[in-house]
Image (cartoon, rainbow, N blue to C red; front, side, top):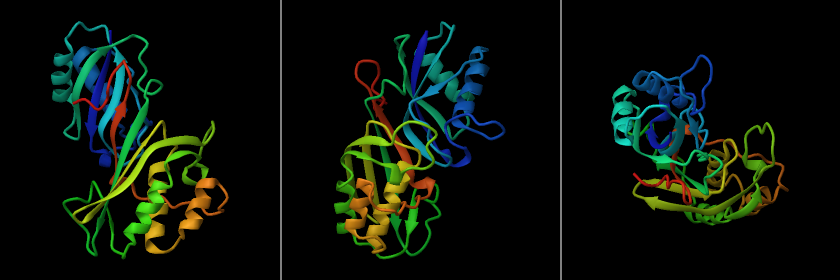
Length: 250
């Protein structure tokens, strides 16, 4: 039987989703909980490989099990065995061919910035503080330029293989109290792409980069490489599917 789960986590204490030898990861935490519950050694596959310190509200994972327990039992049992900073929000049985990464139609990420001259102890794990004045209108304009299919090489970390073309279906920036909240929906994302897009847009807001330079980065003509915004402000909000599973459901 193949199950898919929607997982929420605070990524502060983890070196990303994917298993890495000698350091804690979300994947390892889920597999340990499954082993404690079922006695099976199970490999968990995720829809996205979030980086160290990045959070998720709607990460989607799948795995195969020989267990005959119901999905509800899996959800309750895994939450019993998981640490407090990882939780299974929901689950369902899926087709044997379901792959949470390959079958995803889109992924939505949110990045939160606090506009403040002082740090925010309560929100230090989930938002990045920027104390400098920002031209928010210029930032909103820049953010909209990211929509569409582009070569995002200037907005990516090291690429092991494959191309750097990606499509953003939506990119917006909104004011929310003392926060600026970015939201990006795309078919897929390159390593560090969201954090580097945010870093570049913030540089536009600070006046360190013109809108023209930003547009040339999108076109691949500008020599500059965007700096990477810190991980704590980033959250994988949800993953969208067609017939197999809607990762936004909770």
